[in-house]
Length: 432
Image (cartoon, rainbow, N blue to C red; front, side, top):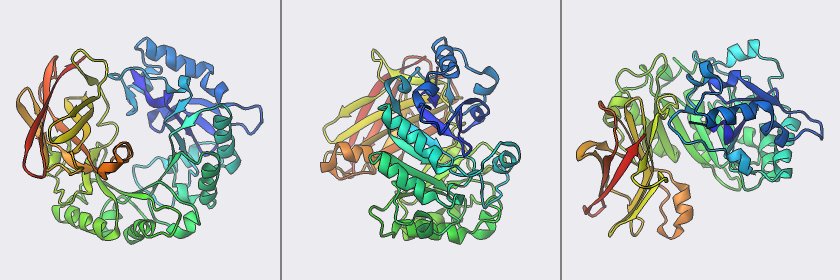
């Protein structure tokens, strides 16, 4: 039993530290104070954090009625407490609770009316968090500027980026935004590593049905400006496209991919959702029917649909990661997991010369499950194998299964190289 709260830190605009940005946000764990005596170590070792640790170690939900509905709580994962090792995978920073849009399913308006202020984070709060982490030798992999508001609605957003670069120059900085802003004015001379723009549709009449008061042309321009910026480093730009019943036509999905290529976007991610207005044409059961015509396009789902019940472990091994260097290909399965009869396989593969795969078929006990989506960004693989010059070797498959994955089960990948050579990668997995 695991929860990523023991690997992350979520700080709201008012300095409150909450359990996470889902139903767990109703659990207040602590608060950031500007006093020089305030320490992040005191937070991570307070009574509530120890309650979380002790509960998970006993295979018990820390807050039964809340955890059961939280997309970030996984009963099938092994407990990992990165905080004890002074490792923070992500600091989630809500620079603002304000927003310029009125998306009907967003909690921002409700939060503004019911949550204690301030609505804009004080830069000194952010500085105190980073300084305390640094002073206490915590490593921070990623800072995510997001939350329940629009980060760019804080008029000094670029100062947050500047501060993060000065205190933690090696930490990856990610912005999640609706993109209804001017990129240059928002970032000034600062740069981000990843910019994710939530833009659900290509045509204004469909886009504005959810992104109320939003301008699709402005969001598209934001992405284009991010890729053409003259900053020290251009960001990796992701177009996040939630599939609703009013923006899921084949024609619009194809044209969106073509538009993404025109803009220079690095990735367009179609999101299967479980919420109101969700697509009736596409679901987790038929993702293979979504028309992916370009390698920059892929499909994923909301965290709740990906919630893990069981992780596959290779027979006679405690490590879920499996590496095979075959005659013509490199292949790594990072994770196989099951959630409510949906099986997901994630990993990366490429030819010995860095070539992309032509196809990857996934089999379970010799029965074809489906074809994996290819071409996903994997900068970590590029960093490990720079000589292969391939940062898009990732693959994923999420598929509905109609029988539980009892143990052991043989999962096999059938890899097809760019020259049509087929190599097989079988692994016996235990799902418990």
